[in-house]
Image (cartoon, rainbow, N blue to C red; front, top):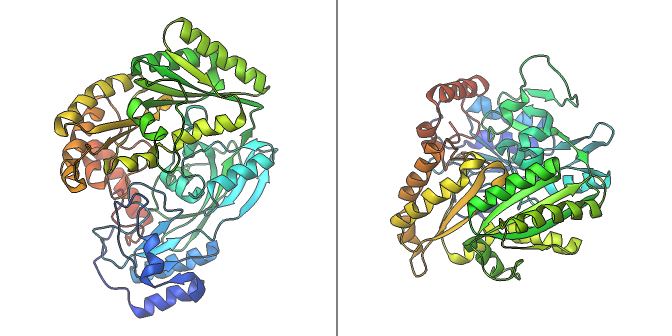
Amino acid sequence: MKTLQPAALTETTMQRLVAVVGEKYALREPDEIEPYTTEARGRYHTTSPLVLRPGSTQEVAAILKIASQTGTPIVPQGGNTGLVGAGIPSVAGSGCEVMLSLGRLNKIINVDPDNNTMTVEAGAVLQNIQNAASDADRLFPLTLGAQGSCQIGGNISSNAGGVGVLSYGNTRDLVMGLEVVLPSGEIWNGLSRLRKDNTGYDLKNLFIGAEGTLGVVTKAVVKLFPKPRGRDVAYAALRSPDDALTLLNLAKAQLGAGLTAFELISHNAMECTVSYSASPQSRPVQGRHPWYVLVEVSSGRSAEDARGMMERVLGDALEKDIVVDATLAESLAQQNNFWLMRENMSWAQRDLGASVKHDISVPVGKIPEFIRLADPTVLKIVPDARVVNFGHMGDGNLHYNISQPDGWKKEDFFKHETAVHDAVFAIVEALDGSISAEHGIGQMKRDRLPDFKDATALAMMRQIKASFDPEGIMNPGKVV
């Protein structure tokens, strides 16, 4: 695989690229480009000479063919909601990376309730896909805090997780087929709707989670599921993560597939959310508690059945003194509000100032041990730091975030960022975990990957990259 040399984008190449999409859909002014080159959290702010907004797969193919011929680096972007700098030009790049925004490819092409599939373009907004599934009396279960603006192509390219992984899996488990434009400009039509197809390598999985480094996803066939006939949501207060793990195992044993979400929330995360300046909320459980879980159960029969399932589990947990207190949502509006509190946690943390964030996973049974080890370790490095810890306990994924101490300056806090990452990642590695559970590698964790990834695995990844992208034009500086 070639390494691109820093070079200015020539006027001739720029004109060829612009001609593919037309002047209307080519952005060249700095104020127009800035939203595309600024990462959602503001941690990365880079530059690009050009943003292209293609309207078809054929236009994407024409762009990549020119890019491959001229050695022009291309950065694909969906809704720009990523958190590891994967969808914007590399900070260490040449400054000549062209942005490829997929937002115009936003059609929902086909909904097939009988086959439980939907065919969509890569720029379709996740929430629109959810709504189209619901209109067909089906469920598309991928659920994220950014679902009102993130796009399915980006979800696929980052193998997004979200709150439904416990029952439905990551994005990888929800994709049946893809259409992908390769760096050469060739179009691979892998839009299979088959549940079984054992005819060789499963090529789609090479592109899911590849963060745009192997090609550009332009269409997808995603899985749909029967829509639950009943749902119930509750908050429970607990004394410790060990009690949360006990409750999780109890709920799994009693509910099986009926347990559709189990979110662990620390005291600091809850307090941050209830006082969030943009959307303050009442505490869902009376009083302040060390830990909380947000539990969701779903029933294929009725809302009454879902309520009965929830009452049996929480009643049993209260009787066994696993749970201190619990509140069940009494209406659909309150269910949605309970979830809003959870979804706001990342944004609410902004009120506390700067933060060092971790998207880690460990085996589910080791979550309490991770917390016992990580909290005192971090506080030794940054005394009085505020640990804002929450995440998807049901699948072992925590968003272990550290907010700056009250009264500290942001720049002084960030001086400790590397030391905090080193300490947290060392604990994750010791517990057989991962430094990236659902956000990806991007440019944020690229240089750390060799320390945590098997050398043979990295060599295989580089071979795959070189095979698909010999000119090295696809999203340079990311992943490998």
